[in-house]
Length: 191
Image (cartoon, rainbow, N blue to C red):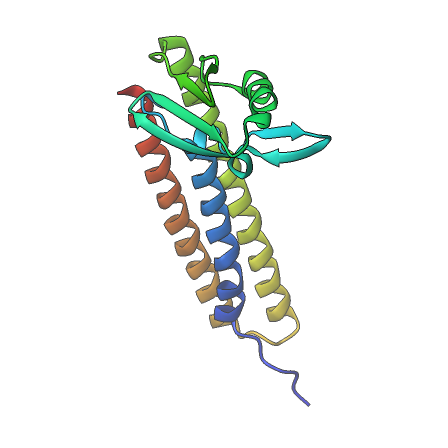
């Protein structure tokens, strides 16, 4: 009596969404990295403690970018201002201090220093390596599953090697996407 056959394609298809999640995570992390242009993503996820509870800044205020190097934060309620300013001062990696103007908070981003640019490049290189490591981990897991299926007679030898080649192609596809994302961000930082 033969056990159910397992398809190497199904195993590979199962890991693709996980690899997409790695790309999405990397993309979100890169949005948070400051360049010469301001972006709400630089501050929107900063955690603000208000009345003993923690909130993301985007839950407490409207965030806009009226000029290329300026972020304006307009709290939904003026009672949030003091706690938002504390959170911004504590978490700001932008080289800028928040300035309160009536019922809004303004942050002007200074030009990036050469040293700060190098630090940012180093940081995104670390994120790149983390993403690649995670992709390799998923590849290894899928390859183990394919080999196990072969050992149990659920996957033919030809399909085992096809699976290995398809996994290699999939990993190369995602590594290329990562390289493109990192390359684009490095250009933004360097310009």
